[in-house]
Structures are given as C-alpha cells and as structure tokens.
Length: 631
Image 1 (cartoon, rainbow, N blue to C red):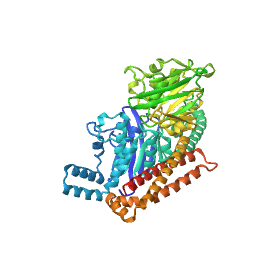
Image 2: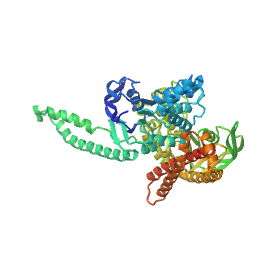
Image 3: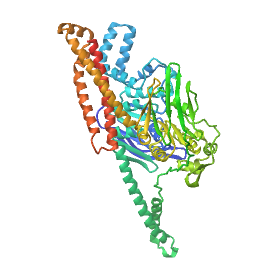
Image 4: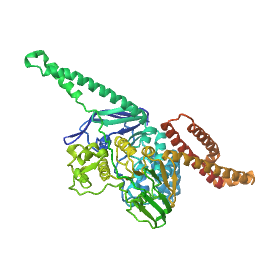
C-alpha cells in the first residue's frame, strides 16, 4: 500500500441509550504508525474499536480508511469457525501469498503435475515460500504446533492464540488488537513485542502491558470523560506529558475558581445594582462556573490494611510431589515461606503454575509429601476466574457476603460501600446486577472480595487481565505497602518487576528453581546462560565442519548438490556471517548493561533487546547445524 494516511476519524460520537460513551472524537493514523488506546475500564475502548470497523454503528461523525487498506482485527471474542481446523481457519486470509499457498496445497493433494508446476510458479511470484516460513514461525512461537486440531476442541487460551496468529499471518496494512497479551505466557509476550516492534504494519491496540507501551508504541491516545488526548511517544513520554497536562488543567481550574468568587459576589448583588447591559456577563458567569466545577482529581484507591500478624510457621512444603498422568508438576519440592516474602511464579503455559497455587492454598492435595499451613495464615486468593454469582445478586451484596466493614490501621474501619467507591464503583452502581458488569469490573469486584477478608497471605493468579493501566498502578501501590506474604503469577513483566523479590521458575519436568531477583534480572541471567550454551554448540558445529572438510572438496560438492536446494545453499553460506554479527551485537548489549549510572527503564530495554538477540543466535545456530548435517 502506498504511504500516507491510513485512517481518519472526524467527530465520532456513540451512545447506548441515554448513556454517552464518547463524543466528537478526532484522530488519524499514518502508515507505519504504532498507536495504543488507553482508558479506564468501561469508558469505551473496545466499543471504539467496533465502531471503527462498523461492527457497532456510530451516532455521529465519520470513519474513513484508505481505499487500499487491508485490515485485521483481534477482538475479545475469537471469531473463529469452530467446525474447522486451526489450519483451515488460518487459510482464510485474502492475499497473494495465501492464495498461492492454497493453490499449492490443493495441487499436492490432487497429485496433478501440471497444476503443481503452476502452483510452484505462483508461490515464487508471491514470495509465498518466505510467507509460509514466517507463518510456521508465528504458529510455533504461539505454541500452536498441531494445526490439524479442530477449533471446538481447543481451550479458551488456545482459541485466542489462533485468532492472534491469524491476524499476524495475514500481514495486513492495519492491525487492530484488543488486549493481545491475554492468554500468552511470558516467552510468547516477549516474542510478540519484538515482532510488533519491527513490523511495518500500522498498529492500533488496546493493552495494559506497559512494556508494550514502552517498546512498541510511538503514539498513545487516552480516552477519558474530557475527550481523546494524543501523546506522541511511548509510555514514559505519556507519563511525563500527562503530568504536565494535569498540572495545567489544575492551574486553569484554580484561576477559574478565583475569578468565579469575584463574579459570584456581583451575581448575588441586588437586582437594582445590575444594568440592562449585564446579560452577557451573566452568560459568561455560567460558562465560568462550568469550568471551575470540573473534577480533575483522579479517583484514589489507597487502603491501609491491618492484616492479622503471621506466626512463626507460615507455609511449609515438604518433598511435595504432584503429577497429572505423564505431566509432572512437582517432583519432591521442599520450601518454607518466611514473613513478608514476595515471590513471582514463572513457567510456560501448562507447567503447573495454577496447580501449585491450589496446592499452596489447600484447594488441591499432593500425590506425595505434605503441605503445612500455619494456624495464623489467612489466604486471599485472587483466581483467574471470578466467582459465579446468582443472576439476581447486586454489586453491594457480593461484598456483604464477605463482611460489611473492612478493618484498617489505627482502629479505623471502611464500609463496603466506601470500598466500592474507592475502587471506582460510584454509589449509583452499587445496586446494579453483577451480570451486567464488564470483565474489568468483575475483576475489580473479585479483588474487593479478596481484600474484604483481611488476608495476610495474598495469592494472585493473573490479576492484571482485564484491568486498565490506571487501576494496575493503584494496585501496585497498595501491594507495595502490604506487609504480609505475596505469591504472584502474572504475564505483566512491569507489574511483576515492581513487586517481587525473587522468583520460582517451573521447568515443566517437576523441578522448581529459586532465583534471587525480579523477572527482568532473571531474564538477564537466563540469557547469559543461553549464550554460553549457544557458544558451546557453535564450537561443536565448527569442529564437525572442519572434520567434514577433510573428506575432500569433490565428495563434499557432490553430497552438497544432492541434499541442499539452491536457496538452502545460499542460506547456509551466509549463516556464519549472520551469527557473527549477532554475537557482536550481543557483546555490545552486555557491555552497555554493565555501564554505571544506567536507570531501570534503560536496563529493561537493553535486557529485552538482549533476549531477542540471544534467541535469534540460538535459532540461527540450530539452523546452521541442521543444514551442515544435511550438507
């Protein structure tokens, strides 16, 4: 697609009945721009996405796409055909490469030599060979290896990953993503971050992942009750500019209030004191009053919990074993928790993080060994799935089921209604039926029920899903002040880095590694280990290559031409130089990370880039070994 404007939005307005969702929005996207849309939950982010695509009708304004723009949309609902396989769903893309691949697959199935030759030529014209290779890489990185499975047999997370893979494989001009990191493990998220950062596709996404906002985005749009605000730059730039805008708005409001006090004295004067020329001044006063009464303060959620004190024995795991069939979760693990521990739990999907949590909280029993819970421990378990409520239950009743008051420090109490208001449930929403709440609102209500029990050992299993970036910041501040124990499972690296002191890593074979540090520090250490392992493999490969050279050039040439295609030969000849360049880049990154005076944000950026380069070295080295063995 030619360069220029991809999307133009003018005066866009949307209502649901009497409720105004947004009004008079103006913005646009240029080719290659990577933008994020952030807002508090319930303010209309997903609705705006649907209006842009005409899934929901607008009540005013216009949405204009460049006529040649190909669009892919990842919605909250996967939108897949349940009666077809993963591969069949992915083959629905409408571009030259995918049409050539469908033609090629059909020709192979029909065993028609002429059709196969025509399909082969079409694959060459559309460069579908590299397209197919990239599609396989995307599927592999998202853990979708068996593409012959039917979609209706997949888990919710797998369906979501198939829908994401479909969007990425289509290679659209404009990619609209609604919470793309949900249901991805940390490794998948890091890969997706790198993929989106380097793609030339125009991007508009809704996400609460602040690493994404920092590394991928060059523009952030904030939707709030005052309209749509555009902030050029990434998350750090947004925080700085929003702080400046907030300060300016407060100053303008304070000036308006000062002027209003003087005008108020005039308005309250006797009617005889006013002249017939003062109507314009009265109209101006009404406008001034509106500006002076604007509420700019953010809703604060600051709680000083007073949890029961933990005793000497908190939580002890003694040689705990747990397995499901051939899948071993724990193989004789022993660990004793200490007061105030803050632990992150890391592992690929399926390694048993949720199972370990159920063992710790006593919701599941081990196959061997024992779990001993101290007498003073009060768990607060924030699970991935909110509890089920009766259709007739109201928001305030969900808290009353736990308690009517929550104890705070210094003998204070907080009523259930006050707690709801602090967590952004206004008083007029307290008697709404729970089944009408959004996913993010249910998450917040679930969190309040956990806190209402006044726990001293918090166990959080993916608390960041469906929470907006503002609520996440508030939750972080609360957890930093929490004096009890914390066990956290989260794919939000930013969230985990701020809160944990060490991490447990489940290896998927029953082992648990205890690493002293947060997630980013663990990744730096793991990348260094990967580098050493890759270097060892490279040395073995070089030694094997030298041994092969002793066979003689004539014999090698004959074997080479038989086993490697022309494209593979060119790839093989260039891989050593590529690996050497990557090794140099990695050395430079490691040197930069050891520099004095480096701040946390820069360290995180360098660590993320180091992870990408290390994985690329490993992939290229494995490919070189594979081609070398065939050669």
